[in-house]
Length: 158
Image (cartoon, rainbow, N blue to C red; front, top):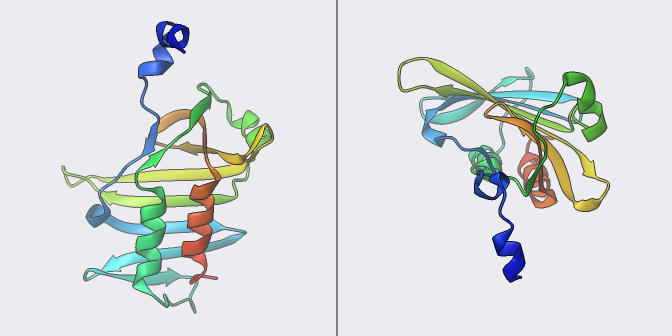
């Protein structure tokens, strides 16, 4: 144990936070899950579904639960730092299992778009999944519990 503490690398000091945002600043979100796309926008401090046409939110708390499941999102580890788009299929990220796109109001009146993709299960450890975010470069390993919480939140959508 003492030897492991002496064998520090640059990665030891690198943050594994993949995603963090301010919930009140979110103007719109898009969810792509199991081939279905949902878009939800904030209207007068309440969430309203805009896509698909006949979709209505059953419960405002479902959106809050979804946002809480991924904010903040800390990775278990970095799988690969530099990734080509052609390589994403190996991690189940082309196409991903789950995609969340957030339109966030910036402090300088510029909107920022944040995307989170969650892919396949890690074959070496089934309690982990691969993920990537536009806020961090690379493919990360996250806990399967994140995907379980996302599925629970999306129950009201399906």
